[in-house]
Image (cartoon, rainbow, N blue to C red; front, top):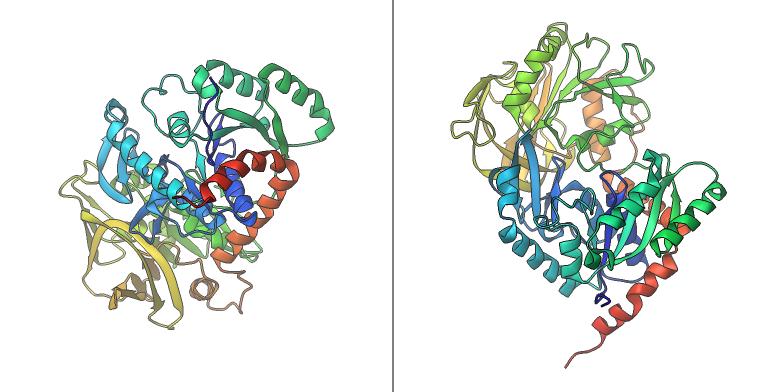
Length: 508
């Protein structure tokens, strides 16, 4: 029996990192540009890159980008379940934007039914509010060992009555096995929902793959919706791993003609999207460092956010980077701390209840006279304010358990929190430290300019580029145009026309 189809689309993959997140964003933008009200949805995500939605909680960064693509306000219902890894076997569990505890993978998968129900409530809500919902899957949609327990791939597609577009990555090789093998191991009811295939990240002469398209269509009985060329220069938020395009531990002396900023590549680094805006400044180079080395050729060294501050401090000590940072600072270097990085620069981090790890207390760098206590509830909010020294406006968001007490406060920012002025961070000129709890602090051009002037006071005004939201919007438009050109968008739209029309008909 043929499955019932609604006005929902699902973008699933043959594996992780095949391009599902960006393809979903492109579909959202194309559908919105074609006049549909559209929303993204990912039932469960795993990522330490998150964003704060206006309706009160955290969602995966990819769903934030997809909501921007759909020109709708990001919501916790776009990503109702979020796992934030804090150790190899533990993750913080976020449900409808709120932290509800730490879970192990085995315990998580023992009973996913309560989370499934909550996620599908969000899905139903979105389907009521929008013409089209575009679902993103997770990893491979054909993981037979997880099929009965997961709810982000075909269980969500069945719940939404969605058509499925299967995305495969030809760049990694084995694309025929990816596609034919994935379809072969799916249950019949899952395979019946797959309506088309996209071969993504193609490089070279497209005509050389014509026989490949013919083979796939012959062996699957499904249309190849498009063979999408690799899009060079695309710069959108990464979901959960530092992208391969960044400079990872480059040799000493690299980018000597630029203002160089080092970001420590912590094992549990979180919200490293904070530094994308800096990396786009033409005269600035951002390097991610994960091995002990002299840091003297950097204008500033950044300690970024961390999902497990205690473990990452231990790694810094073990790797030798802890001493590298101290040597850099003793020699006159400037240090920057963002969220967990701010906590690390202090004297102590206390986790009396074991909220983040099993370490109850750890020593920090001792370069800020401050003590951080980790405690519930988690502080999750979007805020705006200004730099105290200059009055330059700043916006961003906070996501942290830490409450930091300063022996001699020297705040960096004043924030407007529900009409109350609240100071944040540290600007210690004598000790060359600049720190804040605020993620996204570099996203707007004036704030980015102010920070770079602190890093290099001798420089003239830099060309720092547009605000992040403007940049993201331009990138989404460009990628959506790329997909419209290389995918049979007319066929995809035809799947939705009747279903959307029936939803829009007056009832009663």
